[in-house]
Image (cartoon, rainbow, N blue to C red; front, side, top):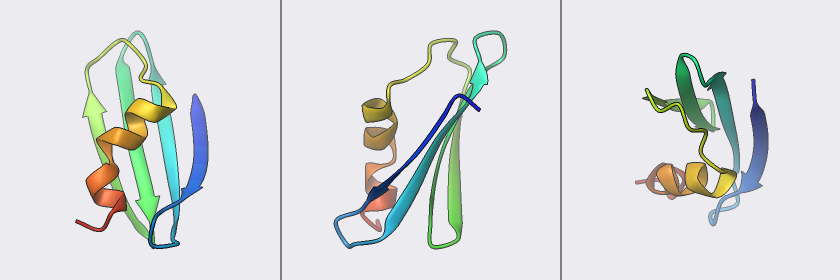
Length: 64
C-alpha cells in the first residue's frame, strides 16, 4: 500500500481512502464508508495525489 487516510464527509461519516499499486502494474484507488467499498482501477502509471483521489470519489462520499 502506498497511502491510506480518513476524512469526515459532509454528512459526518468517516471515509477511508486508499492508494495501492506501483508504477509497473498501475494503481488501484478505493474509498470505503459504512462497510461499503468502491474501487477505481486505472492502468495509469502515474500516482494521483490525495486531492485527486478525493475528487474522483466525491459523488460516492456525498451519497449519490
